[in-house]
Length: 324
Image (cartoon, rainbow, N blue to C red; front, side, top):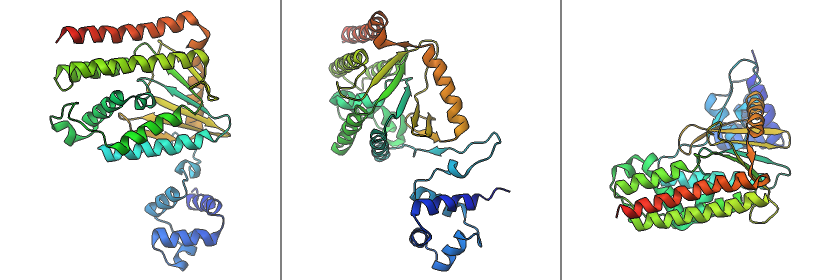
């Protein structure tokens, strides 16, 4: 039988820089006596599952790190679920901290397979940010869903606005590759149509949001042309792939480590550092990119791609206007 307890404590001792420091943390976090903590470390008594999770979480150790089985099982972690605006704030904080770490890592690769337009872009624009948060809460918060709160009545807390803008700013300083398709914009537009048909958002505000989407896309088009974010050092590569609909997964590769984030609900993700899974996904990404068009390298393809999105937005604006 694998000695997972020993594997865990080997990692904990490395992260805590010594047995004495680790014991102090165990006394504080697990409410153990000094003697009991040493017995856990030396393998003379078993650590409980909850104790192991608590210590791994404190030192930022993934449970994948102690799981070396060759069978067809993997260990995944979960970004906390989002049920209300407080959870959304925590999600923003989690994303901000992780992007900050990536920004400091040389030669990091960040690849976003976009089923929907990445949320980082929505946070820059006032009405667009408000609408996306409104939509997320309608889909994730049972209490908010049950209330008839129109878009115009809805207020985004200032701290949420600030964190959303901060998330966008940090993302625009991290080099990334994104894979879009012709349907990547659909969800955004369908959400506008849906709430307008329910008379929960005014025609004027739909028009304003459409204008903000147009402005957002023009900035993305310019960055795709130049392969730079905001004209800064961070590179940006935008690919078009219409053979396969993406799933909003995120693949990160840095130093000798790989990490994969897979969505299981609107903003909730599982993530894993499992070497086999990450390597297999990387191979799939390589094939997807080979069958994709790098839009900075093909003026015709880029113009056609963005013009289709601009036309869809203009068509929506006209149809909404006619419905008045």
